[in-house]
Image 1 (cartoon, rainbow, N blue to C red):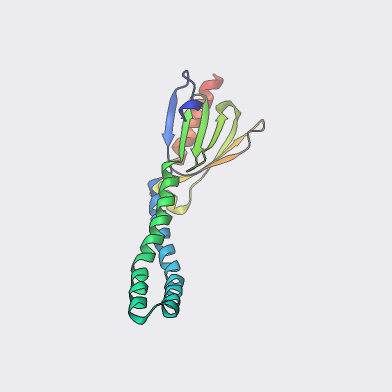
Image 2 (cartoon, rainbow, N blue to C red; image 1 turned 45 degrees about the horizontal axis):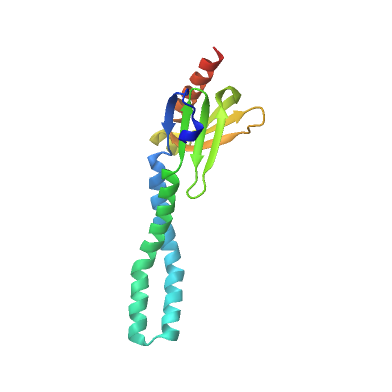
Length: 169
């Protein structure tokens, strides 16, 4: 990120996905672990019956029954945690920068003078918990891009528009 900000730029605002993103990711990870638990148990039981004696098969099945949902949920949540940690949006006095990616980085920059419109989408739960998404419409071939699940998207819009107006003055 630091390579995309010139020494003359001033950082006005930096944000990440809302903490609610992590809560939803945690619940989804638990549900995924439970959902995938049944086929894992069935496969483990079948393999234990075919390849192992009765006592060993019961131990293997019990071990998999106890560990598989935790392992699946942990892996799924660790992925979402990495997504959260590597998603940063910065507004400077000259541009908007969105950085994401776990292994490979995706960096999107848009000069503020190219921003044509900003649409804010706040779902019902977002109104209660203070988060939403922002669609930034740009001109001159920059394309539109969305910044999802950020806290206080109306404040984000205000900061961007204030910075854009400061450039044009």
